[in-house]
Length: 101
Image (cartoon, rainbow, N blue to C red; front, side, top):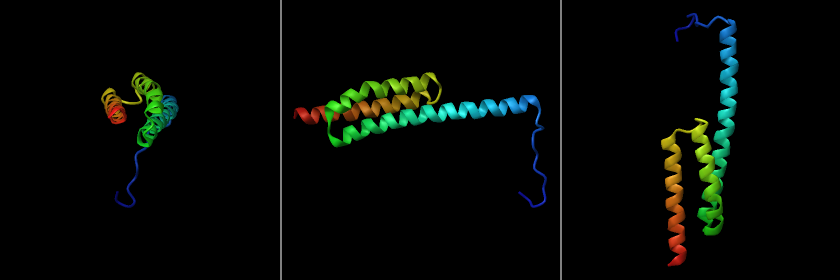
């Protein structure tokens, strides 16, 4: 931006201030939900990389449930959550087959 150019700001009307409050609240909720999903996915990936099929199996349903909740709360899009579930399921099945063989 050129130096000395004025920056346009919205006037601080009631509706603008309310919109700012709503946006901050939504962002905080989305951040919390996204953090919860990411930590559950991280735990499952850790169980998969350690080779612990039983622990990964226990974490699978909880992780998939968290991903489905994120879809319902519109924190994640459906395709993104389904991609995560698909990749985790493939890794879990590969680990199970590895243990059998």
